[in-house]
Length: 71
Image (cartoon, rainbow, N blue to C red; front, side, top):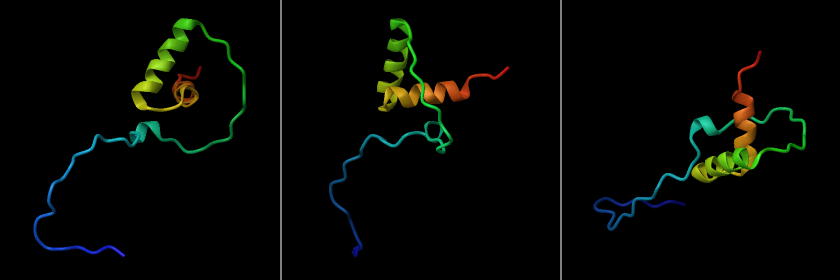
């Protein structure tokens, strides 16, 4: 049960937004597991992006591949 009161709340600490952006969220779809070898340069790119969004590297790679243009 939550109790609310009138008046001042007191000291408030603002927190950094830790939730992923809507673009980073995606519905679970059917997936096929693969093993992928990438260059060290590509790995560093995905690793940096994963750290920036605080996501696992495989999630960033999946989303990048899902958004890649289809021919």
